[in-house]
Image 1 (cartoon, rainbow, N blue to C red):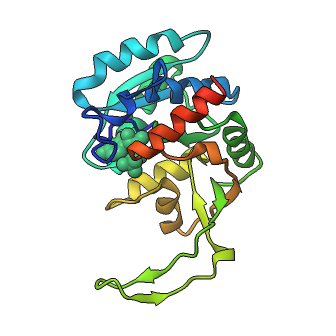
Image 2 (cartoon, rainbow, N blue to C red):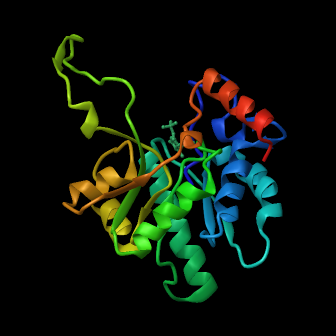
Image 3 (cartoon, rainbow, N blue to C red):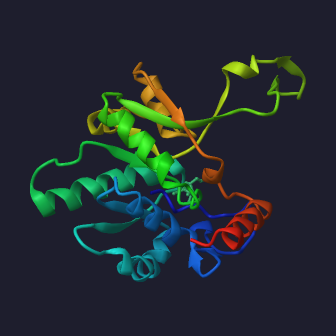
Length: 231
Ligand code: C5P
C-alpha cells in the first residue's frame, strides 16, 4: 500500500494518508478495508521516512490473528514507494516462512480508503482465475480530449472504449516483480508497467466509492459518505 505521498494537493499540511476522516486516518481505513475484505492476508504500508513510528502505532491494533502488517519507507515517486514495498514484502515473508506463499499481490493506494470489499474481491478472484494482471475500472462519463503542448485538441478517443482505472490492482506475483525489475522510469499505475512487458491486463468492475482522495473537495465527499454510512 503506497501511503508515502506528500498530499500537497489536499492542502492539509501533513502527508495525505495521515489525514483523519472521521476518527481514523486514511491509512488505518485503507489497511482495515483490505484486511476486512476476507481475501487479504498481509499488508505492507509504505509511509514517509518520518512517519514510521506513527504508522506502527496506528496499525498495530490491526495486527490480529494471522495477519502480518509491515511498515516501510517510501521514495520520491509512487513507483519508488511500491518498489520499496515489494522489497519489504519479500524480506518479511522470507523471515516468516522461508518460502513464497502468496498467490496474488495487490497494490492499493492508501488514498482510496473507502474502497468496498467487493472491488477487492473481484480483483483477487480474477487473478486466481488465471489473469496475470487485473485492474478495477469504471466507465468514463466525460468526453476525453487529447491535447498538444499548446493545449489544442488533437483527438477525441471513442468514450465507449475508455475506462477510468482504480486500485487495488492485482497481479500474479512473478509478473508484478518482473514488471518492477524491468521498470526504468515512472508510471502512474502498476498495470502500466505490466503492459510494457507485453502482458495482458484484464479489467473487472470497480466502484464509485473507490475514488481517490486528492483534493479538499474529495475529502469533503469522503466525509459525507462516512456520515451517511459510518464504517
Ligand atoms: O499522488 P497520488 O494521489 O497519485 O498517490 C497515489 C498513492 O500513492 C497515495 O496513496 C500516495 O500516498 C502514494 N504515493 C507514495 N509515494 C509517493 C507518491 C505517492 O506512496 N512518492
